[in-house]
Length: 218
Image (cartoon, rainbow, N blue to C red; front, side, top):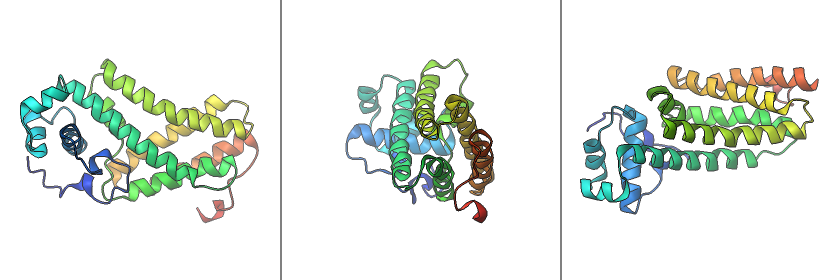
């Protein structure tokens, strides 16, 4: 399949996409090809033959590693999730300052991600949107991915001594997901800044403080 997109998933992805990482084993080559096609063309629309053609491997090799396309989708989501979380939380670990600064930095890191030429949205949001909500494998993968973010958000809210850490984590997660979808649809990275301003308002309302020292620059 010639997707005509100049391998958009493979350009300037700064370590957040599994599809952009070097693939050495036959299994990784299949997964890398599948991830690229899934994120550019969709999970349902991408056929096994297209994956095999891009990976340059035989059908028998694919089925030696994956029992079905559904198994391959699950493996790709797991790999993409691990790669993205390593990049995302790694970037947040570089942020100095108190918990509120780290929480607001979430949206700065998102803007960095949205500005990448290879940005294609969140594969978990895309997969859940494509498949019936009763697809247990996709739903479990998406729920697990979201739980990592919620756990991190709760930890920061606890450090801020916010009364209802669960509600704050959920509120910020909604802003994260909304910014991702808006940026994907519009190709406008500044939705991250809009979400950041809303996060500042929420934190001020529950903690009685305004945003960090950069608030006036936003």
